[in-house]
Length: 353
Image (cartoon, rainbow, N blue to C red):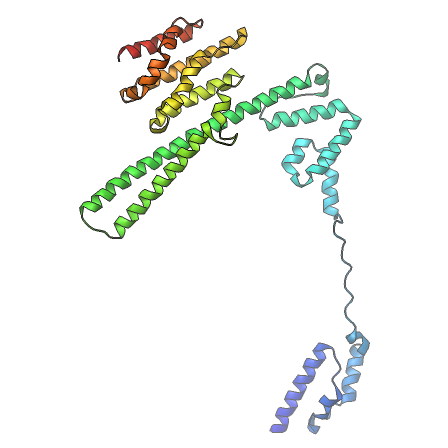
């Protein structure tokens, strides 16, 4: 029984050595029991030679050659080759990884045909700004490229101003929602305190009240930075309300009127009302721009009408009324009829007080 067990153990060890591909040492054979002599060392070596030589087991497998870093695969070559048939905008939208190569190809096209390549570049700018305009190479001889680029810059400025002003309007909406939550939480907290119980409910309400209050402060601080922030991005209103473009000035005045009416706790102050008063004098020398400036003055008057309609706002408007009352009277005789009509309506509101 012991000899059989030893034989099984020996065969198992030989099988493991065979899998490893190494020739067993002589000492291993010396320790094998004589009852398994049917598989001698000679037979075992012949079996190994039949499967392969000793050298074949000792040699390490030849590693596959590594592809050098930076080598371009077949797929990448095909992708780059396909860029020649794409415009600059198509490369930006669909082949973002190959923008630099696309630019180099555009430079090559420009060297061959400057007008066609310039038209392609302008079309990319048009599409990026959301303008629906078709430009052909033949059109470049009839237009001033500088004027086209300037128009695109103005369009981008209009969009950026509108987005920035709308951002403040969104801040106000969030702050008002948080304010409603704060009032509700405060009422619930007062009700719990009347019960004279300091449990987990009171602790939860205190945390919620603190959270809403902190977030309201964050929103209001971001609104203030729109006017007096240190960074240029935050001083959006101070730069744009006196922009050379009357349309942008009108957008700023209209937005300010909405902000004051929607969130008087922050904006119904002389430091913000003065901008409405200053834009009552909006005017430019150019006849065409004078018509545009009239829209700015009218927008300011309409914003003031909305503020004077609310009796609660009148006490906070007393200093503003005293400062700009004469200008409001002058607007009743404005060169623009629509401004004059709006100013008369504003004066009627003032007579109530």
